Length: 211
Ligand code: MD3
Ligand code: FE
Image (cartoon, rainbow, N blue to C red):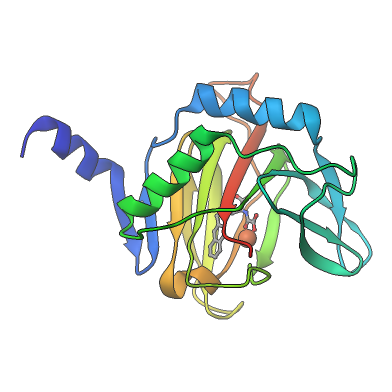
């Protein structure tokens, strides 16, 4: 095994059945630029919940369908309800990254039609939930983390399952497939980075086949 392969083997971690982590896999500078381009067209907004309060995470989307939640629940929409326009196109670099990350996890023919963008300021968390509004759970979800690190939690098939924690750093890509696709999961409150006090936010992209 040459050094290049040794390096790649170290960066790919099989955490559990259906949970693959690719450390530092995304081009962080390019992704940061492309995220800001998208948000200049379809800005971040607080989404509502069926409980009637707003989430502290703000959200936008790119691609054919965008995830949107309000008092009536979570749905995929072809148009941004804020701008009444289609969501911004999914950049080729996003699509290619998501497809190649899925291949690294052994999944061929992934063709995401949706990319949800979550934004977390310091102190904000995401409570435990399942992602089950997509039509076909046999497709994976590919997540890309940008900015401040997060502690991601998975609980298994039930909310009361044994908690496992995974640290997601700038540029990390996580692929959820198979049994893990319907696991309960959440994100602990984002903490500042003592070594980078000017860094105050985290973005997470989730690539999905919604329809
Ligand atoms: C595990 N986002 O948008 S991404 C979400 O960091 C969401 O913003 C988190 O959960 C975030 O729904 C976590 C990683 C992720 C996404 C979907 C999953 C993990 C998952 C679906 C099943 C199991
Ligand atoms: Fe989720």
